[in-house]
Image (cartoon, rainbow, N blue to C red; front, side, top):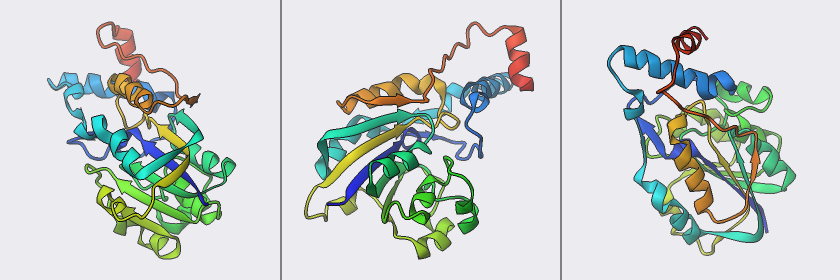
Length: 236
């Protein structure tokens, strides 16, 4: 039986009118400082950035839907991190040959096949798993709010076994999908810190013990931002 990794990005549930915030390195600046900068800049224009981000109603029913089609092994390992790049290590170390990904992004690599020659990062980990032959199949379930399209990755799609699916496709399965490991990532450069409480609630709703890996707490306090703090955020 092939081992399966179920990998879920928190941004699958987050949507905003500003569909593309761009590409960022995953560091303290992008995880928290940049969010304060965005907040301050928006406030200067009379806007509250906190009102621009919403959580999908699917959040409350997601795990129930998952359990209709996926069966969790008794000793299944669950990991929580900020970066989705950890899925590369999880799949490799747990000998997973299949990945089911729920995400707003494919993480196959951006920039064609050449992007798979770079070191593993949050934007190419799935493509690297395929290229390095650690997995044989990848099933991508895009968020309903994604701005991506499968044809953006046509060169990778031609070479590797990548399928783009939705929940309705799972109804045709003859048996439940056995899951050996689950990874839930926050992708803090793209998901706002004021929703982190909901992120933790989502993790706990799975009902399994989990290992937290490099997912620092983000304190969001817009009431006590000093002038010096504002200057630092704006110039960072």
